[in-house]
Amino acid sequence: MSSRSYNMERVSPFFAPNRILLGKGVAGQVGQEVRMLGGKKVLIVTDPGVVKVGLTAAIEEGLKAEGIPWGIYADVVPEPPARIIDEAAKIAREGNYDTVIGIGGGSSLDVAKGVAMMATHTGKALDYVGQNMFKERGLTKILIPTTAGTGSEATGVCVVTDEEENTKKSYYSHLLLPESALLDPLLTVSMPPSVTADTGMDALSHAVESFVSVNRTPHSEILSLEAIRLIAESMAVACLKGSELWARYNMLLASNLAGMAFTSGGLGASHGLAYPLGTEYHIPHGKSNAIMLPHVMRFNRVACPEQFAKIAVAMGQPIEGLPLYDAAEMACEAVEQLIETIGLSSRLPDYGVPDTDIPRLVECALKQSRFFVPNPRNLGEKEIRSIYEMAF
Ligand code: NAD
Image (tube, rainbow, N blue to C red; front, side, top):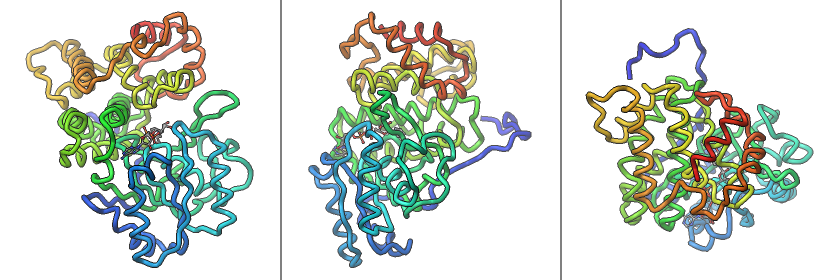
């Protein structure tokens, strides 16, 4: 990537957590981290699956060692409805907690972020959906991902389901970034291959979408390209031989880099078209991205073939001597190959979605038009329909 290609006239933002600690066993340091941040009483926010595989034990041990009292809210569900944030924030307020530790996948981390904010804001969580709606920093946030992943521990984003409208809504605010993120690859080893594959595809979607976003920045480009390289190198091993800690480490790092990349550089149409698959068919978020990503890439590649050629190189494709558009196509093929290797499919019929549902999908995707703004090609109803058709 030549630094000559950066736009010096534009002011490029970069957002990241205050502190990131990455390393095997680092979750055990959580007690010291709470102390250092001045915390006196902690609410752990997680889901029953994370508790069941024993991942909260290291956190509780760490708090106990430092003599820090804690409570636990373990009722988070996937694609969490906003009312869960309201419910847990009430507990946080009434219990006088000053620190929230989110441990789990994106669902738990997002609820933890929302709880930390709503504990000090009035009204309902849904009142604050949108850009920069929070007025203050909320409770101290420490985020510990157990999937790799959403990168939620590194983003100023929180995603909830509005049950009444049956659609996903997002909060965007730098105030959602945590004071501290602890990245411990040991916590991701228990992920079964299917969760590893789904969540890894979410990270790849973040990296690819932010790399071609029209709002990409120098920071986001550097981070997303390295995330793509790490994922291409490690994801198949993480899925097929999950005990390999180097692959887990690389995936956790990649997910974190991709999170910082998209929180600064934006996402794109793949996320916009994937969300309806979650709300309409309850397909997990990462899997929905695996379905849509190659089709959206193929739709987008004519808009910025140079970027797609760089993705192909980062994924180890031999593009030398190829015309630019063929090199760009290699990026789409590399992603398709990876999806097949990890046992996923990018075909909607494989998930029981009939083609008669296309109009319904289009209607839902139109509600996610915020994702089409940074997309390198414009999308309207016709384009959205044609991309869904590619998935049949
Ligand atoms: P998830 O948090 O819903 O977890 C999926 C399942 O995996 C759960 O049953 C959980 O118990 C289990 N699990 C988690 N870690 C495990 C482990 N180490 N071992 C065994 N099981 C484990 O899934 P996710 O894909 O991480 O998160 C999806 C959510 O994140 C969606 O709501 C999505 O919209 C949101 N998201 C948020 C951001 C952001 O920046 N805030 C970005 C992308 C996605």
